[in-house]
Amino acid sequence: MIAPIKPIDLPDLSNRRAEWLTPDDMAIRIFDGMFDPPKPESNWGLEGIVQPAWIRDVHNTLTGRTFLFGTGPSLRAQLPLLRHMRAEQTWTVNRMRQWDNLPFKPFHHVVAEPGPIAAFGAVIAPLYDYPVALNRVAVNWWKVTAPGWLWVPKAPDDVQMRWDGFYGLGDTLPPLPTGWASPLTVAQLAAWMGFTEFYFLGIDTTQVGQAWDVEQGRTAKPRNIRSILECFDRARRDIQRAGRKVYDCTPGGRINQEGALEYRDLWEVLTEAGHGEGCCKDVVL
Image (cartoon, rainbow, N blue to C red; front, side, top):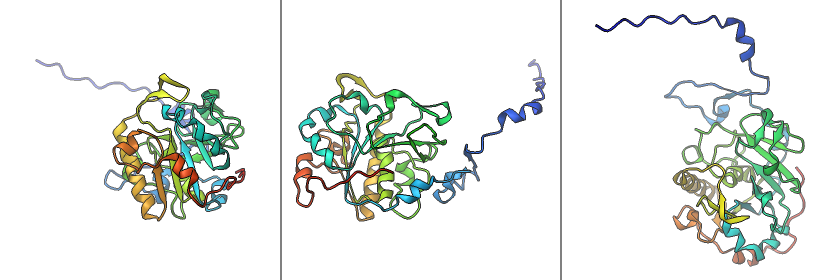
């Protein structure tokens, strides 16, 4: 005979309620129900999110092309061309400072994953910082207050670009959906700023090898490759529908090899008519 299950005596935790109260600047996610998923108009159900004023100020203030860098080993082969990036609007991400041979100072350096963001946003891990960048941007779920960093709200990770779309192309910018690749996630901010042509580099999508260590470098947080490809494919369709252009300049990268983005040779991009040396000026956000 099976013995009956006795009820468990739960402790009275009412006196600990104060410990669970959230700070004023920490978002709370509200679920309306499984058949009514949160929408971008409601900040994906994040309550208490207010876009920083600087994000509103930079809307459609820039135009033309921009280059977004991963940290893949293919950058080593493109090194002679990268010096031309000194005159371009560039974005680097995460641990790029480990590559001592990068021949330009990025206009924007971005951390778009939570691991390097410590002390509830007050500290960025030194390995992921890039002090020489003109602007440093942290894309994160909670507010980032680290000195010298700008904060961009990020959507919960179940809000993904492959399902929910690429944002920044209109007149509202909700917390950014993840693209499962930091350069793609922050491309939404670049679109919001007004850029009309997006060129990705160093996104080999192999998770083996880095620009600073081709043989043994590894992706810090391995991701599902198929998720990345699907996010790039959705981004391409949304960007092109908005009348803008997007390409991959990663030689042999899976993003172009599997058809998510069209491949363009970097030399051809840099030498095409209409883009002279010194076309971009320093823009401090």
